[in-house]
Image (cartoon, rainbow, N blue to C red; front, side, top):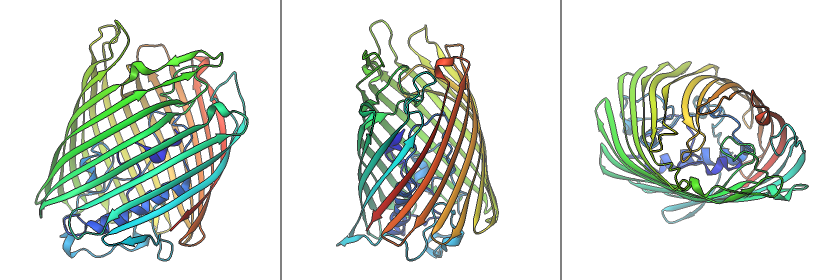
Length: 474
């Protein structure tokens, strides 16, 4: 979806190197997370998740892995964060590293820092409807203003981002969309080893035509309103860190249209999801750690008369993280997911899942990433259509110069669908170059290719996208 910058909860955060605990350095944590937020806008936004498993290699830093408990995370640290030294840019991931002289200046008002930015750009899409029988190309303009505000307190902290996005097509105005989002994180240091973590997001978003969660036959984006909130308690016990939390998600879907003008009502997918989750991380050594995470959910979905979509389920994963100094780091984990629907005609969507990730840094200028993952999921959190997805992805990030980063990612995914005789093969290529002109301006070029080959021909398509974005920040 175009709404990558508005992804659920803390979707804008990316790992930017080892971070100090918010117990002793809340403002440091906020500043480092902020660099990733601006990176999202500089790189440009992906127009549609054509695959069930996005090609992302970023890690979720501590303590936010307590809220994004199924995302990859770095090794737990055994060092005392109060004695930690600042991490040099060359020791952080290439894609998100922030070189001196290129970081945003910001506007300070007392103990608050404000970081405004605006992205303007455009792209060419060879197949705007992601179709094999209604192929149309078009160009579109994109404007994305954003304002981030965070505190500079020594303890505790608040970090919020208000952003919007306007996409206007030249020849297909029905594809135009407007997205807006207010999201934030906050942490409260109850004691030196106990924190209360929260996040929220209020947003108006759109499902892009051609994304897996877009209704079949839609030729316009599907608008929906989204709210999420999470409250978690995180405790450190020497080498062991544990958390428990509660999360709620609310979806309110609107309608879209098919090619003949027929209204496709998606309101049956509206509803609430309530989740109870927990996670544990244990640092066995500086180079080896264990983790386990589990979440149970209760879904209260509107559905249709006589066809309820209410369900209950769980997801659990456990594994190890490892590292050979800074040369090779990785994670291997496996688990199980199950979603049992009240409607007996739907039954249960379930199966095992695994994830293996490896990052090799042969030099400080090059990061090479590998990921293999199997996941059982639904097309949308409030739907009943299940997918068994297997993906292999390879990517690299190279620092051509201090202010020029090139990235290339390729992926292959196999999707098998529950409840229908359908199997899809998806191939993707993503190439990007980011050029930081100075601390105020940057420019990014990108090319994306997607090929979905389905044994149900109506779902097969391929598309090319070429774009340019210019970001101004202060």
